[in-house]
Image (cartoon, rainbow, N blue to C red):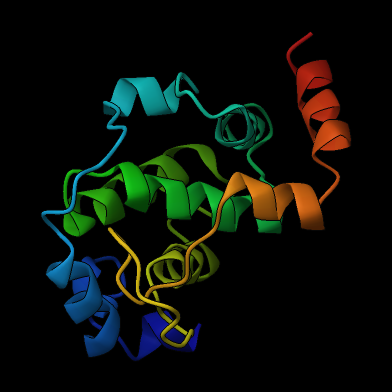
Length: 156
């Protein structure tokens, strides 16, 4: 609630602190291995089965597991043409499909994926010092086989 109440730009890339904006700007021209259209993302048509499952869960239920939402948002950042476009894409998808769309929790959750309420991490391509997440981390920390099965059952 405070993030939205005290930040006139709560629904924009400019809501982020200076350090993630600078880190992402520094890496804005880094090569992206994948880029997807809004339609491909909305329809869960990426190369990443974990991301597709998270998007499918949100589209079908209006919810997404919290850990998966972090991964989901980080991948949108990784695949976006620019950090600003990625931010807008994440907000659009969250606002359209999630029950917390257009809600303070949704705005803060998206901002977290781009560095809000976090600290700098190890420098890497695309992300700069914004926290990175990958599928290997999901496999180590989350029962992905069980999660994928749950999402598969939703579509039946």
